[in-house]
Amino acid sequence: MKRRRFTTTAAAGGGVLMMPSLRAATGSEKKLSGQPNIILIYTDQQHANMMSCAGNKTLKTPAMDYLADNGMRFTRAYTTNPVCVPARISMMTGRFPSDFRDQKGNLVRENSGGAKRFGGASEEVINTLLPITMKEAGYDLFYGGKVHLPEVLSPAKHGFKVYEKNPKMPLAEASSKIIRERKPDDKPFLMWANFISPHDICYMALRDYRFEDRAKPPKKKGLEETDLVALMNRSAKIDADEFLEKHCPPLPPNFAPQEGEPAAIDAYLRIRAFKEEARKNYTEADWRLHRWLYARLTEQVDAEIQLIIDALKESGQEENTLVIFTSDHGDMDGAHRIEHKTALYEESANVPFIAMYKGTIPAGTVNVDALVSTGLDFLPTAADYAGNPAAKADPRGRSMRPLFEGRNVEWRDTLGVESQIGWMVVNSDGKKLIEYDYPYNGKTETQMLDLKADPYETRHFLPEGDRKAAWDSLEKALNEWFPEGHRRMVGEVK
Image (cartoon, rainbow, N blue to C red; front, top):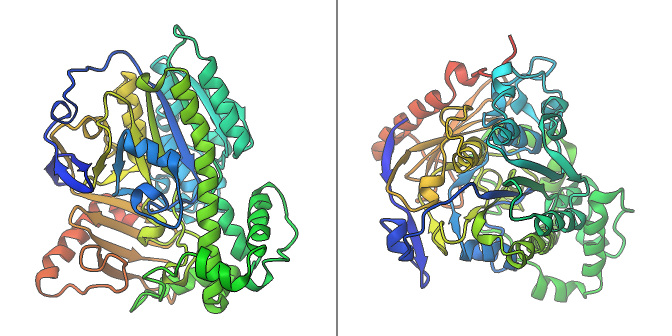
């Protein structure tokens, strides 16, 4: 991959300033001493724009904003695969899900169901998992909340202490308790706190919740829907006209399906009836209710995250703890008349990413440039801070530590993302090339998007004029990221 010199950018007074080094940004001579605690806060189905610190005025996320105000927020962070289980496999292995096959021989990238039937991993992969790497560095390991991993990658099997299974407020309370009870002479710890919200938004379409039925939502089915039903009942207490006028977010700017939309998108929607039903028959009021529910569920997980922040502050551990906040994937949230995930549009693939390490990561910085892969880059980053920088996974994964610390560093020019429906590469200039290979008439389809010329991805661009060179460069990068016909099997069991 091509590399380029990268310099961190810092937000100040609403603008963006060039910051040549950590020392210039902080005026501090502080050096890292020892191994920091590392807390990975992982939400479920939250796209990058679902934070008030990202400029979203339809919700308030003070906990996430606190992390951003006291750390570094990345605007160009991508999941390796915008589906729950594949994304989590990446976080555990530091590799693309398509490096593996399920028990039927299908690529793990296909879907969460296929990924759960994970066919196994080589000894090399198992020996370089996130928990193995951190345990070798002397860390205590804690895992809480949603698992959604194949049995062979079970956190408990590889050294994590599973301390709480309820992925909502009980997880926040249990996490806070562990933090408060740590003693000064305890070993450093890695905590992976897996919250489920705002994932419950899935159930609006799955159970066909509609605006006109707000007062009579379907009977709750279990833990996952409890909060969604409560929010539906809460909305029903407000007059319908007033609710739409004063409470519901507007439709997104890219509400209409993309001009020249790939046939693979339609095929992917039709494979699950509820997705096709939502696109075809949801009213604008239904979509706006969806966006209101999504915002409230995100505020709910923000309140849960606040407990972890409070525990760090009150126990005096903020300055010896690296906190990383991200999500497994996003949600389309009405963009292109789609809900759910899987698509390679920004709403699904671009995720929030904030790193806070007080006194080390310059506060209030916004990195608008570096292409970060949550699944490839977290493991080498954690290993670097733990003092085990030689940890092996996908060699294209990079430690983000130099970025966090404001160093002038060579960084990647392109980044690969995979999906059930295709493969994508995005470059540092905001252009994306997507090769859709989802089955429809036995054909594939390739399109180029340009986030600078068309930030809402309302149309695609042809390889003509001054875009021909960009297309060719992206096509080459796509083949580099996903060689051998885009089916690289590094972790496959022989």
